[in-house]
Length: 367
Image (cartoon, rainbow, N blue to C red; front, side, top):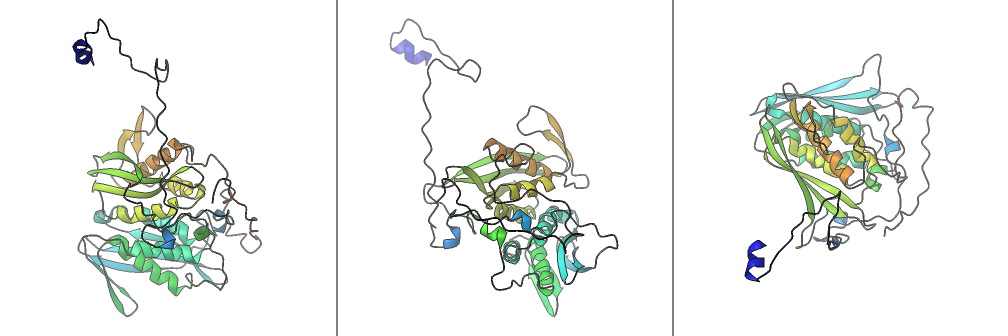
């Protein structure tokens, strides 16, 4: 600037840096970003279109048990062993018997090589406790197609099954067990409240102009995790910006690819109460010797985080807060009327509690 002023023979020049306190002498309104038109599928798949016609019946109310039920006498379960090049691990699928066998959780006893698999099991357990057979099937199918660079084998009935990632093995084992228990069999006309609350059943595909994304660097010196977290975003028909897909790039446990798939599906539920609930559950996810000291998102302070996964969850909550969708505590700023507040444990009162559907309403500004 000074050289240009000298070349033009100016006698003096003033520069300034605008800020949020004193403002600026001159200002130019930034050009408004044109919303990405993803309402029509780019590859002809209708499940990739954004459709927001009406407010579906409450989806969060469909959770049989928002939190793990308290079972004084314990519960039956089945354990499956998965053998792999990177070490063996066990998958436990638990169920309750209350008139019928109902799966409600899965656990993983894994080695250091399968870090992050427990976080997938934690989020998947919440989907298993949901009265939506189609949603559970979609989650398990996505997980079973997670690619990796390791080889795993396990027995399911009379078959020997192979997988290229621990996440895919977990998805296939849980799918096998919940199918045995009849959890994937929906009666004709059975409600699918969570699937109905999706603004896109598959990840929307952008055109050649691309779509916006938010990224942040994550470094955990304790575990050697050093990667970039990417959040793809779009503009909904009501003008609101929302994240819809999560990706990681560089050095991280490949099992986290499965977690990204699970959370990406949760991001596409129209009411952010759903993804908020999932992320809050992950804030306390801990790993042995996986804690580290890092900056608190949105603050100049730092604190200790129990694991890389917990820090990822906090970063995602912060991004939703930046967009005015969630608070920094992970609670929705606006009640959309699609989901009911989280409830207490419903297990003991299941036979006497009836969930009444909420009348459908058109969401303002949505087509």
